[in-house]
Image 1 (cartoon, rainbow, N blue to C red):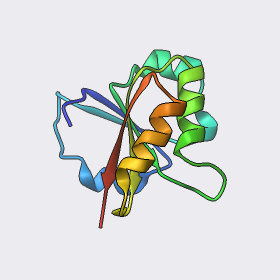
Image 2 (image 1 turned 45 degrees about the horizontal axis):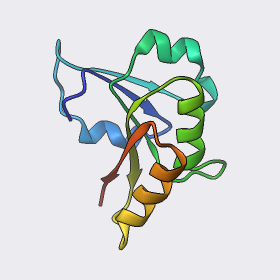
Image 3 (image 1 turned 90 degrees about the vertical axis):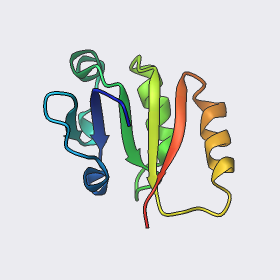
Image 4 (image 1 turned 180 degrees about the vertical axis):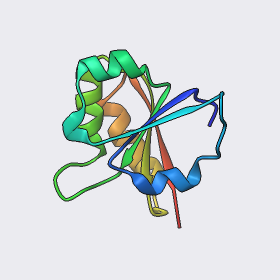
Length: 107
């Protein structure tokens, strides 16, 4: 991932997938309940990583919230490998057209 600033939302498992790049990449970890337009403006993430699904929300909910907060960019859904991953990408992209949706599959 070439992003200079990565915002990780409720997905601490994603941290082990990111290679340390001191001085070239910042990683900010937060929770969905802490998101706000002020945070998006201040952090100015190049990429956001969130879980595909949690007990209370899923990546579609996160994508909708991010678009409403003014985020435009890469959204990575952290998930186990899926048999038809392209269906998930297509569904989220249809609901959140301002986001470049990708899956970040972990074993």
